[in-house]
Image 1: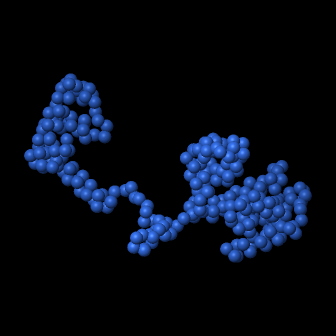
Image 2: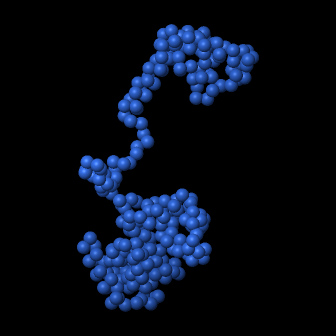
Image 3: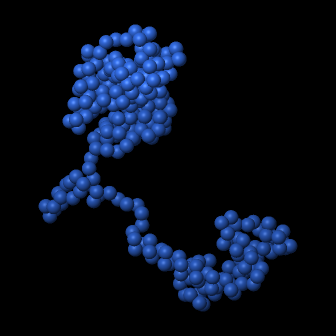
Amino acid sequence: MAQVSGIGQSLAKAARSAPFLDREEEQALAVRWKDRDDEVALHRLAQSHMRLVIAIASRFRHYGLPMADLIQEGHVGLLEAASRFEPERDVRFSTYATWWIRASIQDYILRNWSIVRGGTSSAQKALFFNLRRLRAQLSQTMGSGIGAAVIHQHIAAAVGVSQADVAVMDARISGSDLSLNAPSHESDGGTSSERLDHLVDAAPLPDEVVGEAIDSSRRVAWLRDVLTVLSDRELNIIRARRLSEEAATLESLGERLGISKERVRQIENRAIEKLRKALVDRHRDGAALV
């Protein structure tokens, strides 16, 4: 970090002594860099715009990151702009470079502001960098007594995200990172516990997962065993009505088998009773399957 900060400080110092460029000189340097890969031209072009980098970086100083690092990241964006700039277009380089400088600094802030990465989409990124400003504006125009839910609703509409996203981002910005391994409190025995110890896992316990897998295999085996007591027509109806992901209707089965849907219902009920009796006779605990 000391090396990074030193580079940023040297860039800031060089910016104060760099001369301004007029439009024609700026254009000539950009052409020399694009057409001939003239690194001297690139250096002069970048150095003359370091004041712009510092000015943009200063807008993000309240995020708690070193100013020198923000300047260095802005310089990276400036060099990216130089590599992509098209001198033949009637646009000042400073106008074009502003977007790249700001984007580079914002990406750096999102990567380093918190150990948890946030703002992965463009909407989330806009929310992160505009939340404080929009919240302050709403508090001024609507009064300090306005509720958080109302503020979140207005911000969500302004940025184009859900109200839940605003609430989550607001909580992240308002709080600091906490380690799950940090002690939470001392128990009666005098030993401290970690925050991680108090997280609740909604997933089943390992023994429950294994038990369910064993029971499922056993039930499948029982069902295959007792299906042999059914006739072909009963088996077809049970498979179509009870053992398929999309159950067939009584009417469609009646048309397929050439009988009425009421007759299909009667055969289905009779087959279920046969299965239940066979399960009780062969596997005492299997009656609940049907």
